[in-house]
Amino acid sequence: MKRLIAAIRQGIGDFHKAHTLRHADLSVERALSVARRMCRKSSYAFLITNEAGQSPTARLIQPIVDLQNLDIWMGTNPSLRKVAQIQADNRVTIAFLSEKEHANLILYGRCDVVKDAALNKKYWMPSWSLFFPKGPLSRDYVNLHFTPERMELMNFGQKIVMEPFGLKPLVLLRRNGEWVKTD
Image (cartoon, rainbow, N blue to C red; front, side, top):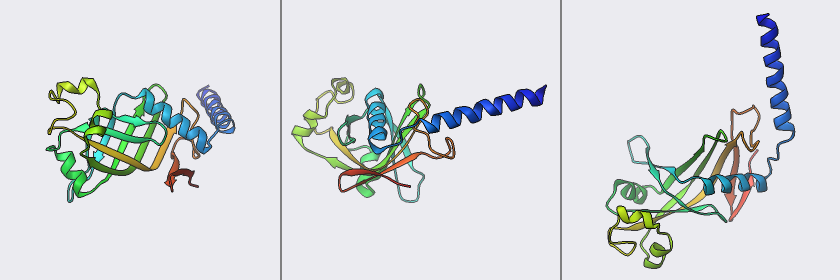
């Protein structure tokens, strides 16, 4: 009986995998649509920075995402460790998670510290007044601007699942401003 149940479960699993992959649209356009949707629905993400001789450092951020090109803006205090880390090595990673869709979106790219009053006002959330009571024009506030160069996406809920089933993500690279799929 145990063998029969195991065989049935295996058959259901194989059917589900085959059905999911056979009907999956893994095009660049679909991947970008799913990535944009994940960014739009995520209030938070993780920013991972590097520091020479140390383990990478992760912290929770509240990103402002330009959904057209997936550039990300973050407000911060210029005296914080992450700013010094980015100035020393601007290669960073930003990770989004959707538990509901069993999905993750990992963006790799470059981040710059931006000190521009107009951009500070443009990329500002009123809720940040708790941390920056003097507002976006304060000397205690700067923007971080992230430009993604590589994207790794896996989203079971939206059928963005590569072979071997669920063991590797769909990967896109940004070349000359355009996203392209890797093999």
